[in-house]
Amino acid sequence: MGKKRVLIIDDDAKNIFALTATLRSKSYECLSCVSAQEALDLLRTDEIIDAILIDMMMPEMDGYEAMPLIQAIEHRRNTPIFAVTAQAMVGDREKCLRAGATEYISKPIDVDRLLALLNRV
Image (cartoon, rainbow, N blue to C red; front, side, top):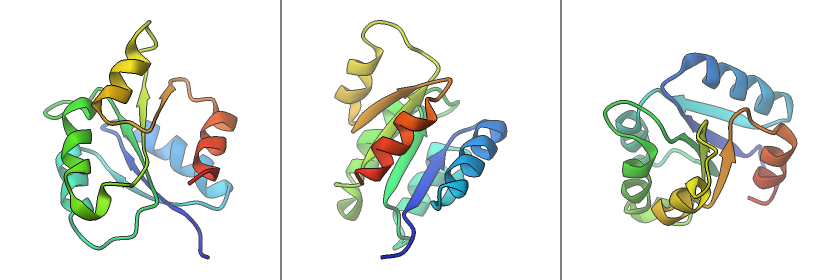
């Protein structure tokens, strides 16, 4: 089996850069999109994606709106989606899970926890 491919959806280029550098150092392949719409367009293709990291707070379409749309794409229905957010208030994890996230990761990202989640994919 080849490297696992992770799609990073985030409107902040610095976050994409940091996540990509971290994941590539651990032998993951990374693709990135700077908007949920760009990600939806990519996810409608046959591009191989093993897991998705999605920022919950983006302009135009946030992660809460995008996750159900991602899951509505037939061949993406079972792709794990990890919600990434700076919001770490009581109830935020549950809100992300209700919206369709497989799991929730707060910023700053605990890299060991993220890798443990991705290793289950």
